[in-house]
Length: 99
Image (cartoon, rainbow, N blue to C red; front, side):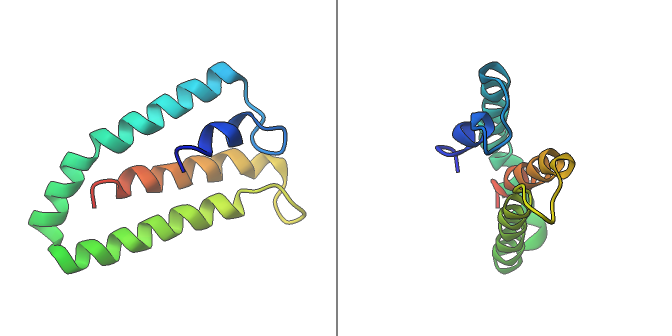
């Protein structure tokens, strides 16, 4: 994911963002993945327990990948829905990083 995200952000078939914007998004993405690991791990250990944590984390990461796959431009997805779906998919990865 980390290796392909900058390429997807700047590619003409992807989101076609400028290099500066893509760098900013990638920087925020990586920092949130590492910063949310501590509170996410605490929440998983203290509140959910190990079995529920694995189940919820698997569902959230699956939802993130599904959202990114559906965010691809095509006949059933006009250009306007691509960026919000990409943002929601990235948010699923951020929330799942501690689980």
